[in-house]
Length: 134
Image (tube, rainbow, N blue to C red):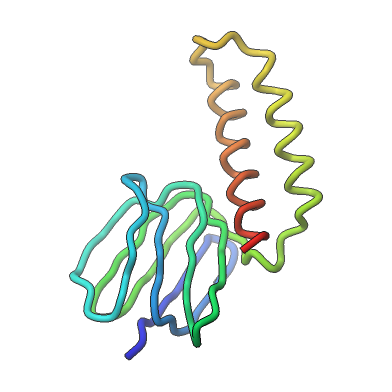
């Protein structure tokens, strides 16, 4: 028995297929989904979705959104996403270095929109790097 998985971003259908298991990066922690899972709706954090099919794991970097689980179907709506094997790791590592450099210019206790944006860029770059290595 398999789960139907769809990952949709505003500009593309990122993934559509079946999976034996899905691990979602929700805002409250990772959620494992197997066939027969109860229905739920959850917010998706910046992180890595992992799916298993034929004993092989595939990683997809997600940039926040929502997921719905209903009757062995998982629909993930995200701001953007990239399949791990499609990610240019050098570019992701450069983005991470630049974001860390930008964040170092802010005082530790500052809560400015610019600092929040830089922290968000760090999270996105880390998710892309993690997805590319799995």
